[in-house]
Structure formats: C-alpha cells, structure tokens
Length: 388
Image (cartoon, rainbow, N blue to C red):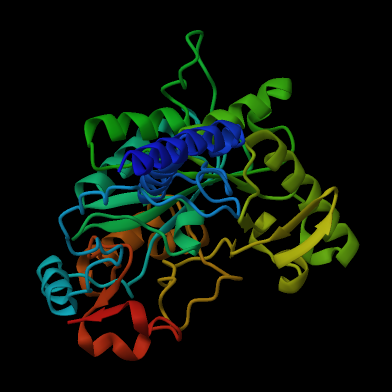
C-alpha cells in the first residue's frame, strides 16, 4: 500500500507538470472551455451579429470534458421565431367592420402656386388650401406620399382613406422658412402642418416635384430638400428645366431627368422613385421610366400625369404605374371644365359614392375588399388578398 501511495503522488506531480507546460490558451482546462462555450451560446441566443467566428473553445481543438458532469438545465420547448399563422377569417371580419375597399380610387391632388392674390387659374390661396385640407381631414382622408402610393406601402388606419398631395415646380410658395427656421405659415408646408396640428390623424406629408433651384432658395435649396426628407415629405423628379418632353429626343429627355435625379439624390440621400411629366405631357414612356444620364440612374416606380380623375388603386388590375392621373386642385371655376373635373367636384363625387373610394382595413400587409370585387384584383396579389 505505501508503494501505491508513492505511485499516486508521482502521477499527481506529473499531471501538474504537464498542466504547467500547456500553452496559455489551453490552461484552465474544462472551466475555460465551458465558460467560453456558454458565452458563445448566450451571444448566439441573443442574435448578436458582432460575435467573431472562431473564438471560444473551438478553433479545431477538442474541448476538455469536465471532471464532474454539469447540472443539466431544465428542459423547455425551443422558442419559435415563426410569426403566428394568419387568421384570414378574423382579418376578413375586421375588414368588413371597417368597410374596407382597397381596390377603390385614390384622389391625387395637383397643386401649383399658393398665393394670397392668385395670378392665374392654377393658383390657390392659403385660405383655399387650408379649407380643402381641413375638409379632407374631416372626411377621414390621411395623406400619403406618392412613393408610398406607388409602392403599395400606404399605412392608413382602418376605415380611413389615403390622399396624395402633390406640388409641382418647386415654387417658393411651397416652402420658405422664418427667422426661427420654421416653415412660413402661408406656404404649402405651413398650411399642411397647421391642419395636422388641428386634426392629429392628418399626416403632415406631401410630395414635391421639383426642378432646378427648388423653392428659389439658391445655395440653401439642398438644405431645404433635406429638411423635407427628414420630416417625412417626399422630394421627387420633375426634370431640370420643365421642358415639354413630348417634343424632345431620347438623349435630351434622359439629360433633363438625370440631372434632376442627381441633384435631389445628392441633397436628400434618397433617389426619387416617382416622376411627374412637365405639362402633363409624356415623352415615350420607356424613355422616362428608366435610364442613366447626368450622373444618375433611375427606375421610376410611378409616373404622374396632369389627369382629370382619381387614380386607380395600385392593387387594381387596370392600374398603370407609367400613367397615373392626378386631379387639379381647384374649385368650380369654368376653365377647362373644372366644375366637373377639379378637386372639389371629385371629392364631392367620392363622398356620394363611398363604395368607389379606397378605404383601408388598417393592415398594410393585406389587400381587403368585398368579395364581389375579386375580379378587379391585380395578378400576383392573391396571397395578400382578404376578401369578405
């Protein structure tokens, strides 16, 4: 037995010596391996993408098993990352309760100058704009940008209706700042923000289709466009010089669009995805729709005309993103049959025909509508359809 004690002592000394000779990364044996493995597992479970591959007990070495088995953690079912199953019946019931019709028409208003003393039939006064936008708020309309409209990402509460407010030409009456850096109250932005303050459901957003020197602000124009983008407004392409593209060749059309695209992108960091034809007169649609020139590339998802009726829903089968009509913002003046085809007349018509108007179900992931309108759904949207 004494010999056995001496043999055990010798083996113990040898083991200690071997441990001291191991490389530093290997010291600590199973304790280090377990700690590192546990830390790696914790990082993995937390989803930390900053974890460095290869760190921990791995690197091709086999971790030393602990001498004493670790206490097993209580078993629990693995957490599921899958979203809950879509309850179509519940969604349809909610859509019915909201009177949803996301295949209905959307008014897209086209505004030019905002002047206290109008100089042409296209001009609107701040008071007229305020009255019309207040009406929109009271009738349940929620502004969305042109980009949100063409991409089908309109996040509008259930039972309410999207409206797109567009302003052409980058007039100084659209945006100007006071000494404190706030929008002047009689500008388009000032009026929109006032209505939004008085009617919290009215989103203070709009789309500004601009040309060279937006808002006549010179070297401050880029900062103004950034301000708009940072406050949820959209700055979009209207060509550099506002020329009639219908009489121009392909290269000239591309140059007009490309230089405007470059200016807006440089200022806002957001390449425009929408475009409005000057004078509402299109060149060949393929020329305007996508291309490269003037130091920029573009592939517009929506191109807007100066039309005379509400636009089809972007989910409707007849919707054409290359030729989206807009409604001239005006009253019942006799010019150009405005009594029938301008904004007040169309808003009156939509109020009398609510079944023709886009009404949201409150869920941007679905396209809800009465079952009888299924024949009007665009191809490729069956998975999002929620008929009731």
